[in-house]
Length: 323
Image (cartoon, rainbow, N blue to C red):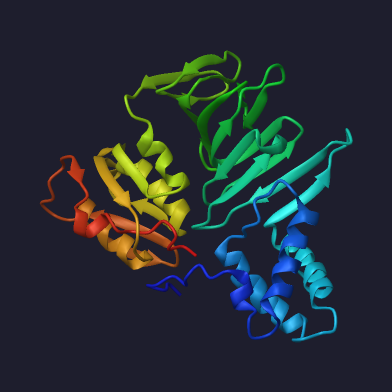
């Protein structure tokens, strides 16, 4: 069932206010995160909190004698089970940190005592072993200058290495290319033949090919980290694919020519239903639904020109609506 209005982002201790004193819950929550992974910012995606709430309420009756210990043990087991966070040990003895986000969720991972900050987009998984990050999805990296040991990001057969820079990397499991965008500094990225990228460059890479373009403004590609989801001169296919990851839809096109249309859009502040309404207007399409699969069919006599999303229809669409 699709809800038009997502639940508010209420802190976990407010969820438990009826069952246990908030201070005890807060201590339990902080203790959990400290034990689970001290480098993970102590924030859990909303959908995960809602899921855990129901399970913990049924598994742990209110006002047990040791609330903090009970909740800490229960939360750690449940977080690991649902895959929100995990800690494993690689064969070399190095600890591997794993973090996942679900539909509509962002998360931040802090590494190397604050020298590396990684922001995860929805439906993204990262695993970190020492100085190597393996990524499925999309992430934004802020890396302080490193004198000798580079940070390595692996996406399929493509490897990106940096000593100090700000950049984003994207490759979801269903995608065949890795996209690297450099906001500051420079990176080395590629498969068999890596290329050096500098600020303002965008690379689309496979293990054997690299296509590099330059933009005067990388902001539309990075605002999603703490603000709206923005598209500028993007293909309809690229926009729909990204919106699908953020809102939990799978879009199919009844007419393949629609994929190549160029659009501008900004999503910030509305429901799933509002997103679909805006896309319907923006692309001049009709929609049919099969679960979360949405098939778009061009309307008759529709103009095939570049469209810019109107303020009323798109400007206030929320990338948090998938919660």
